[in-house]
Image 1: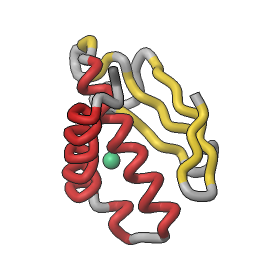
Image 2: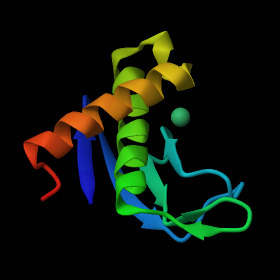
Image 3: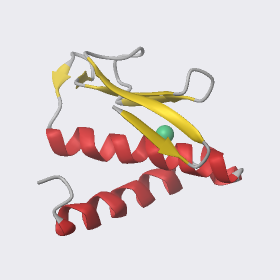
Length: 97
Ligand SMILES: [Zn+2]
């Protein structure tokens, strides 16, 4: 899937797992990719759809803040708390149905 965030088009994909295995997702601003891990943790465990949707929002919030030139881009707590709320709203709107 391709998604445009601000000026940048990202390729979004699911991957079996990431390095380190505890990573759930990754945004690469150079390669313009967002990867979502289907399994994470030590040992690797299958992730829920909800968990992967939240991770996708987490990575997209990073990308939005990067596009905005905001220093908040590196604030993991801020990014995650905002992603959580967007995901919560999307579920109510039925965006994922
Ligand atoms: Zn993050």
